[in-house]
Length: 575
Image (tube, rainbow, N blue to C red; front, side):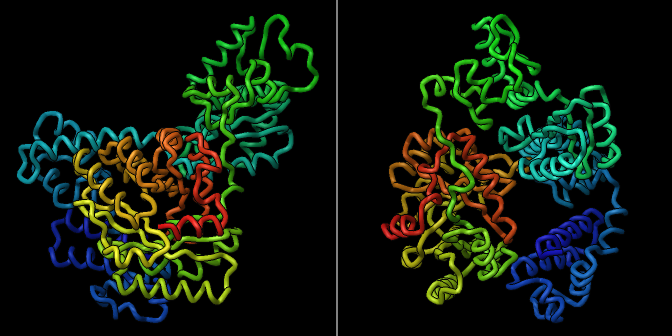
């Protein structure tokens, strides 16, 4: 168990103790313990195994023992017992943004609220705003949070769904009788969140294949079974719809079950204009180009029959792809192999899990030409942000590593610099100019109004040492909505000042949203696809970033980190 997981458990213990009305000093001890764990330098396991936890400020003997138990055994009986002692409904309330232990306890004791539905009813009736410490604004925020949570509960992150789907696809390919198997639906289109996983299976023996799937995969739960589809509940709770398609109809089904509703309507209209009927089963009608074909048509064949070049899955949203296709102006979308490195990567110097050397080695193993290191700045105390002295020390270390030629991957020195409330940057220009690049990000005061937040970002963008804007809207998918921001003005400011906008590929962010990239591209703003990596494995998030970039109509030429090391070095030197 890593330090983030341990710190999260300590924070939850503090909340659970608040629910029970425990001693405030005891509650504060777990909050302090969580902060100490997040801020420690190096690997938590090493601290445990070397017996040095008691050297950390805020960690006493009792907390040290609990940390050791979590790290060594992956669980803590005290924590499990504490959770069991709290009604399930109150545990659910802990997931609502804006509700801490004290407020949940007050809601429970004063109004008898012990479930999400009870909280919603009390807010709608106006009872919550009457409680001391709440008020009308809090009540409105809670209703808003509940509405979002209800919607979020039905969705899953793209990255998590992709991992589940690819694991399932790998198992399905080994089952005899399956001719073809592909992901379809919103997951194939690269939507940032998805409802269910759609998988198409080409087979001449749907009944036999269905039996083999249920026998070999042993899913957590069979939800439904028909002659053409089975619905499974996967181990992580996601729903997968497996549709059985005759091999000769597979191309039609893949096109139909991939496109959005609006895209498919346009496809059917094109077929009708030619006297045909298009469905997931075929293209029927007089003189249909597939009437007498022995070979099963592919998606590409279907698009060509309707007078179109192949439209990539990511663009099938009816947001201009048909007009672009008819004019021969579809973009040549960026591909995974186009990227040569990435920026926005953290190390254990701030809140990353791996050392500088480990992060660079991982990048080298992936074949990257370069990697940018951008640990947090000093105001991000919760992420062990670096002081000026620590930044300079890291810069010196990076320069020595580059000079040593120990790694074939070049390291760029950088920082993820907090944008303060006023739009000033967390470090003075005298320090920023010593770095190769500077990513500016908002991490606090996310509730500012649109005018204030927009002005705040634009002021930071206008700083001469800013290189790129990180996770511009601050959203956390399925958890936190984007901050109020005039993105048109922010994009214009980046265009006017020659600044890059990050496509943060971290699975919970995927920010800036794909719907804005076409506008940024037209205004000449470069994109940098960054993993926001806090662990070596996070570097793989670039796959999700590529998918979103493709969905935003981006080509390799629109993306900063498709450039060679020499080109990137020249660009950064012009700061």
